[in-house]
Length: 357
Image 1: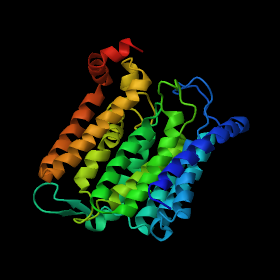
Image 2: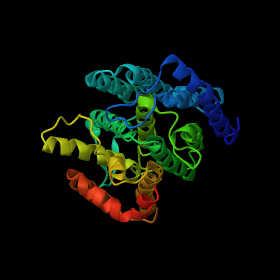
Image 3: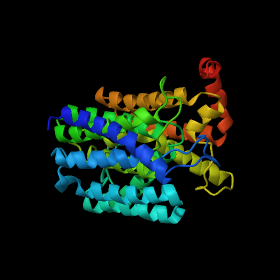
Image 4: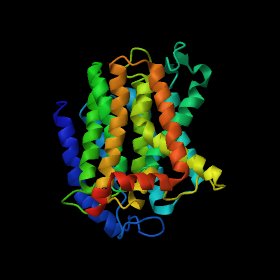
């Protein structure tokens, strides 16, 4: 199948499947009910992730774009997260069980899919850093962290799918520039599937509210597949990306997850306790409508990825990128200690968008 035709078909399949399956989910009671921290006003089916990855996985195989000999471990990991996430969306699994299942999915791609972050590049200007025997635990922790980082961005309409599309677009560009055309085809297939979902999930002039959610099945699976490509595209000196560039591309959700964890510990709270003080919540607390908040955050993440990708392409030393990344990380942790700081800045910067809500 044509490399250009397959993504179009994936997009159309997702759109055409969503319309009847959304009605079927409502009829069957497979919905995310409003209440508590959830601000949506009516029951919404959380089946977006199931549809996205069903189309991506099946079409990838039947179109011969996805070679199962290379991607079977990713497929197994995705199935673990899709099934457990679908159950969690309806029955709220215990946090420890969800962590075990995430570790299981991560273990499959690390130990069976050859996903190991052994090469870290010349981060500090003293030569290439290798993780050696620590590559397995390091990668497991990184994969689970990214799974949860993407999952925690799924707090306003269109955000988790939108920022994942930004990440995957950078990966696709890097794969094309390096001549890794099969990986670019696989990434394009996934991006097209997500875009079909975003028509129903991201607010726009024709859609005031999301009519479909990713669900935990979708957001955790996005984290896993992003981790898969992040490692494979930066696993050595001859691969399309350097690890520090990947860190710039996908760094912001990781920043925010670590910052919230640290803030809760400092405040004597359970670090895993949910709240409404993540970065995207600051936009809402500042009075910025969701229809503006999601694109603005996507733009911030795209700018951060563009800085990392562009600076390295222009020959900026890796140590400069490393120090810049660390400084941004520390700054975000400092700002997140008092969420009112972010709210104040956002109100000043985005006052016109607050007044037109």
